[in-house]
Every structure is written in structure tokens, then in C-alpha cells.
Length: 147
Image (cartoon, rainbow, N blue to C red):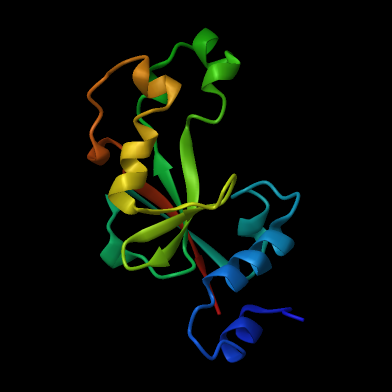
């Protein structure tokens, strides 16, 4: 049984531990508010950078948050509309080589730039522009595992 990240790394002969790490984090974070509840745990360090992180700043296992500036242009009444719920930004895990994996849903893997382009399809973005650029959605936060 895998109980710690160290167990995943130790037992991974082919160096393909991404799925195991996700399974570990999914079990450990189940039912917790991200990032609120998990930043209280001793193995995470929350870091913020308003100008945004690049892939060179990230390490595999970092949970990163893409900022959506278009959400903050909505009126308070618009923010109450369910079609904009959750549009403040997006949490994913950085898995290395410029790639991220979705935390929720199908756990699809994207390059950072492709994920930023994916965010351009959100309702809050489309409310203001049809020409959003990948660079409109910087990675402004990361939860860095401390092991």
C-alpha cells in the first residue's frame, strides 16, 4: 500500500510515478478545501507571484493556480450567476516538462500554454472577449510540496 510520496518514489522502478502521486494526493485531500485546508498541513508551502510563474520556476508535484482576470471584471450580481461559478482561476498539478494535469474531471494532461488556451473558453472570459491569449492566464500561486 502507498502511504507516503516516498513510498511511490521508492517502488517506482520505471520512473513513472505521476499516477501514484495523484492517487496519493486524491486520497489525502478528499473532502478538503483547496488550497485553504491543505495549506495548514506541514508538507505544503504556499507561494504567490503576481507577475506569474514560468515552467522553469515549477517542480513536478507543485499544485498551481491559473488566475483568470476576466472573472474579476464581472459585476457582483454576475458573479452570483451559476454559469460563472469557479471561474476565478483553475487548480492543476504540474507534472514536469511544461505539462499540467487536471485535478478534477478526466485528469487530462495539457502543456501549460494549451491549458491557458483552454481557459479562454470559460464563460467569464467569453463575456468580455473572443480573443483571449494564453498569457492572459498567469500561474500566480503554487503549493509546493515539502518532502
